[in-house]
Length: 115
Image (cartoon, rainbow, N blue to C red; front, side, top):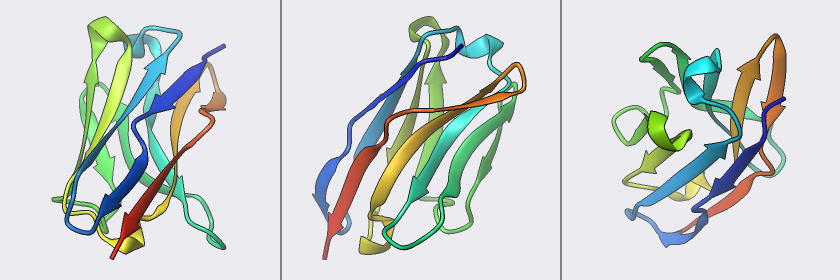
Protein backbone atom coordinates (compact mmCIF):
# COMPACT_ATOMS: atom_id res chain seq x y z
CA UNK A 1 0.00 0.00 0.00
CA UNK A 2 0.92 3.65 -0.39
CA UNK A 3 0.01 6.45 1.98
CA UNK A 4 0.05 10.00 0.66
CA UNK A 5 0.01 13.12 2.82
CA UNK A 6 -0.38 16.51 1.17
CA UNK A 7 0.43 19.92 2.58
CA UNK A 8 0.91 23.46 1.40
CA UNK A 9 -2.51 24.60 0.27
CA UNK A 10 -4.07 27.87 1.29
CA UNK A 11 -5.41 31.23 0.18
CA UNK A 12 -3.37 33.36 -2.21
CA UNK A 13 -4.01 36.45 -4.30
CA UNK A 14 -4.12 36.20 -8.08
CA UNK A 15 -0.62 36.29 -9.48
CA UNK A 16 0.82 34.70 -6.37
CA UNK A 17 2.56 31.38 -5.79
CA UNK A 18 2.15 28.28 -3.65
CA UNK A 19 4.07 25.05 -3.31
CA UNK A 20 2.31 21.82 -2.52
CA UNK A 21 4.07 18.82 -1.02
CA UNK A 22 3.12 15.15 -0.98
CA UNK A 23 5.00 12.79 1.28
CA UNK A 24 4.74 9.08 0.53
CA UNK A 25 5.13 5.99 2.67
CA UNK A 26 7.19 4.28 -0.05
CA UNK A 27 10.17 5.27 -2.12
CA UNK A 28 9.03 7.44 -5.00
CA UNK A 29 11.41 5.47 -7.18
CA UNK A 30 9.28 2.34 -6.74
CA UNK A 31 6.01 4.05 -7.64
CA UNK A 32 5.07 3.76 -11.29
CA UNK A 33 3.22 7.01 -11.74
CA UNK A 34 2.83 9.85 -9.33
CA UNK A 35 1.54 13.37 -9.52
CA UNK A 36 -1.22 15.87 -8.91
CA UNK A 37 -4.87 16.16 -9.82
CA UNK A 38 -7.41 18.80 -8.87
CA UNK A 39 -11.15 19.11 -8.54
CA UNK A 40 -13.00 22.39 -8.64
CA UNK A 41 -16.58 22.74 -7.32
CA UNK A 42 -19.05 21.20 -9.74
CA UNK A 43 -16.32 19.85 -12.01
CA UNK A 44 -14.66 16.52 -12.58
CA UNK A 45 -11.25 15.73 -11.18
CA UNK A 46 -8.57 16.57 -13.72
CA UNK A 47 -4.89 15.91 -14.19
CA UNK A 48 -2.58 18.78 -13.32
CA UNK A 49 0.91 17.32 -13.56
CA UNK A 50 2.33 13.83 -13.27
CA UNK A 51 5.53 11.85 -13.49
CA UNK A 52 4.73 9.20 -16.08
CA UNK A 53 7.82 7.07 -15.66
CA UNK A 54 11.38 7.92 -14.72
CA UNK A 55 11.79 11.66 -15.09
CA UNK A 56 9.14 12.06 -17.80
CA UNK A 57 6.34 14.47 -16.98
CA UNK A 58 2.95 15.43 -18.33
CA UNK A 59 1.15 18.71 -17.67
CA UNK A 60 -2.34 19.96 -18.31
CA UNK A 61 -2.27 22.60 -21.01
CA UNK A 62 -3.85 25.12 -18.65
CA UNK A 63 -0.88 24.98 -16.26
CA UNK A 64 2.08 24.56 -18.63
CA UNK A 65 4.67 27.23 -18.05
CA UNK A 66 3.18 28.15 -14.66
CA UNK A 67 3.34 24.92 -12.63
CA UNK A 68 6.32 22.65 -12.11
CA UNK A 69 6.30 19.15 -10.67
CA UNK A 70 9.42 17.92 -8.94
CA UNK A 71 10.52 15.30 -6.44
CA UNK A 72 13.04 14.65 -3.74
CA UNK A 73 13.90 10.96 -3.82
CA UNK A 74 15.69 11.09 -0.48
CA UNK A 75 12.61 12.53 1.23
CA UNK A 76 10.08 10.39 -0.67
CA UNK A 77 8.26 13.58 -1.51
CA UNK A 78 6.93 15.21 -4.63
CA UNK A 79 6.14 18.88 -5.04
CA UNK A 80 4.00 21.12 -7.17
CA UNK A 81 5.30 24.65 -7.54
CA UNK A 82 2.45 26.86 -8.70
CA UNK A 83 3.20 30.33 -10.03
CA UNK A 84 1.06 33.02 -11.61
CA UNK A 85 -2.01 31.59 -9.96
CA UNK A 86 -5.41 32.75 -11.13
CA UNK A 87 -8.93 32.20 -9.74
CA UNK A 88 -9.49 29.34 -12.22
CA UNK A 89 -6.83 27.38 -10.32
CA UNK A 90 -9.05 27.29 -7.24
CA UNK A 91 -9.69 23.65 -6.39
CA UNK A 92 -8.91 20.82 -4.05
CA UNK A 93 -5.56 19.40 -5.12
CA UNK A 94 -4.96 15.68 -4.70
CA UNK A 95 -1.74 13.75 -4.71
CA UNK A 96 -1.97 10.57 -6.78
CA UNK A 97 0.10 7.42 -7.06
CA UNK A 98 -0.23 4.20 -9.01
CA UNK A 99 1.49 1.26 -7.37
CA UNK A 100 1.15 -2.38 -8.31
CA UNK A 101 -1.88 -1.71 -10.52
CA UNK A 102 -3.76 0.21 -7.81
CA UNK A 103 -4.58 3.90 -7.58
CA UNK A 104 -3.93 5.80 -4.36
CA UNK A 105 -5.07 9.28 -3.41
CA UNK A 106 -4.19 11.72 -0.71
CA UNK A 107 -6.79 13.47 1.39
CA UNK A 108 -6.60 16.64 -0.70
CA UNK A 109 -5.52 20.18 0.08
CA UNK A 110 -7.56 23.29 -0.71
CA UNK A 111 -6.07 25.98 -2.92
CA UNK A 112 -8.07 29.19 -3.17
CA UNK A 113 -6.99 32.02 -5.45
CA UNK A 114 -8.64 35.37 -4.77
CA UNK A 115 -9.09 37.87 -7.57
